[in-house]
Image 1 (cartoon, rainbow, N blue to C red):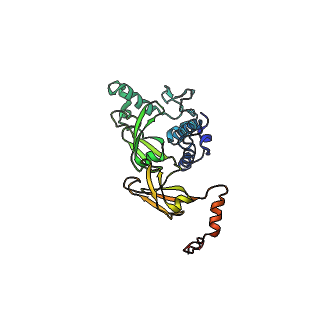
Image 2: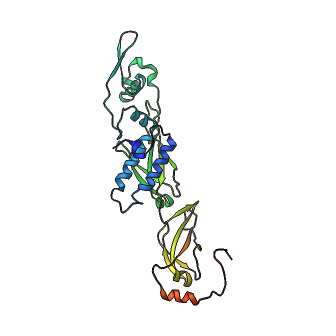
Length: 297
C-alpha cells in the first residue's frame, strides 16, 4: 500500500481532526454503495480505510513515522542497538523506544508469574490493555434502521459490530474488552470504532425525520396520482393530491428513524422537447385564480 498520508491527501504534520475530516470526505466519495458502476471503488475505499486505520492510531502512526512499520502495519527490520551499564554488562534495547521495562513486562505475561526472574521486581505489575481505534463505514439505510456488520482487524480477527438504529456520522462505538490484551491479570482494553455514514442520493436526515425529493410530471401534479416512493423501510404507495406543486410536502407517518416520519417533497418536472398541444392550450388558458409565483401572491 502506498504512503497513507498520500492516500488521505494530508500533510505529515496534520492533526487528528484534519486526518478524520479527510477520511470522511474520501470515504463518502468512494464508498462502493455510492459508486455501483465503478468496479474499482471497493479497492479504492479499502486503501482509504487502511490508511485511516493506521494514522488514527497514535502508536501506529508514531511507529510508521519512525520507520518501524510499513504502510501495511508490517514490522520493518531494525538494526539491534546495544549499550553498556555502569557495571560493564551488555544490555539489549529494541529499536523504536520499546524499553527494557516494557520488554520484561511482556515476557512476564508470556511466561506467567512463576516464570519471572526475581530481579524483575515492579515490572510484574498489572498493565491494562490499550484501547484500539478502528473505522467502519455503513450505508445511510443501515445506520438509520440499525444492523450488524463484521469488521476484520489487521491481525485477521473479526468483530461483529452492532450498529444501533439512528447512528449518526462520526459516532464512536465502544466494545468493551476487545482492544489490546492486558498484562499480569489486568483487563483488556476496548475497541473504539468510529462510524462513517455514506450518503444516499435518495434521502436526507433531519433529526429522526427523513426527507426525500420525488419528481412528478405536470399531469401527475395537476390531476393527482398514486406513486411508489422509496423509504428506509422499503418502497410504499403514496397518493399525490390533485393540484400539487413543487415544494408540496407530504408526510409518511412512522417511516423515519425510530419514531420519526418521512417527508416527501414534490418536484414538478416539465417534459423535455416540444409539446405543441400543451403549448397551444396554455396560450388560451387563464387561471381562475390569478397569482404571481415570483411575488408569492
